Amino acid sequence: MKRIHYSWVILFIAFFSIIIAGIVRSSSGVLIVPFENDFGWERSTISFAFAISLLLYGLSGPFMAALIEVIGLKKMMILAMTTLLVGVLLTFFMVKPWQLVLIWGIIIGLGSGLFLTVLSPYIANKWFEKRRGLALGILTASTATGQLILLPLLAMIVETHSWNWAMGLILILSVIMLAIILLFMKNSPKELGLLPYGLEEESPLVQKAQKKNPISIAFNALFEAVKMKEFWLLAGSFFICGLSTSGLIGTHFISYCIGLGFAAVTAASMISLMGVFDLIGTTLSGWLSDRFDNRWLLFWYYSLRGASLLFLPFALSEGSITFLIIFSVFYGLDWIATVPPTVNISRQIFGIEKSVVVYGWIFAAHQLGAAVAAGGAGMIYKLFDSYSWAFSLAGMFCLLASLFVIVIKKQSFVVKENETYIAK
Image (cartoon, rainbow, N blue to C red; front, side, top):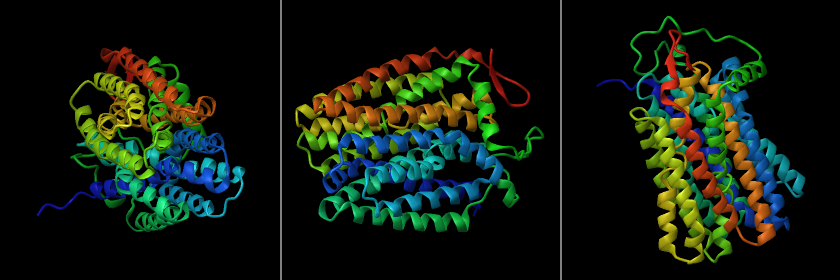
């Protein structure tokens, strides 16, 4: 019997770590109304705290990638999961709005940063030579898997008991995940005397990791990247990606449904359904990104997402479960499917060594868009007592993003001997 390569064990650990971080983040969707009722806080205030979290974990991405190179993958995962644990624990003791901003905006934002930004491309790049796109697709889809398994359960616990019980479940799962990381996580294949999965012999061009200042690593990568128009096109499209996913759907979808007469469990179940199809769509996207033009994949992903978001206000206004299911399936198929093609294009342009840090900056744009949507949709709701404009505008922006990615010229990628890619 052929022995399983340890890269798949690392994939398994990273997969479930991302699930835990993802469910903490996505639980914000079921917590808005309970926090409103229990503490008497305005929805715009709660949305502001969640927006800070989205922005901070995105901005921390490139620095997390640089820190991995300095202190190692295992220590970074332990530090990040511990930070997440502290944030979840402190949630039980908050009583003031500023404490919500501190705990959910800063502590949980930083704790989830590593898992939800650069961990997936780092694992795929460092532990896999073959099946890299598939590995990346599986890891990216893990965020949706957490929603699939846990979000309806959390919504049910909130409705039948309270949000405290829901956070208690998350706390227990986080402790278990921290123990798994401590016991089984490794920094690199070399630590086990292995090569990355699918690599027959080590390339003489592989550079030894240098112990540099993580801040200088992050900003040096940024200064090089901003000179290239491809960086701005990818960052601009990912800004819209964040605006139309975690910032809007992840934060306000459940509240939008509740406001139009749907039960919280029904709305959470729709998020779960999106998770089912996102798991399928994102894994398939990773497979497709190894075989087809990544620009055209992104073009269709953003176009279809835009169409689905424009359809949503109509579906909800009709009060039709059938229309809501159609939206959830359609939207879910490419919720996070944009990540594997974006990572692949980044790797082609900036090279395997620098691409994780550069992708961290691109993902920072993603989270800036998410923060704009999380806070902006709360303000739109306050002004119009409706989310319809927020979701319609997001759909229009997605159509714009489809034009950003198709402008990137395929023939502009050239391979150099050191495996770095630059644009002509």
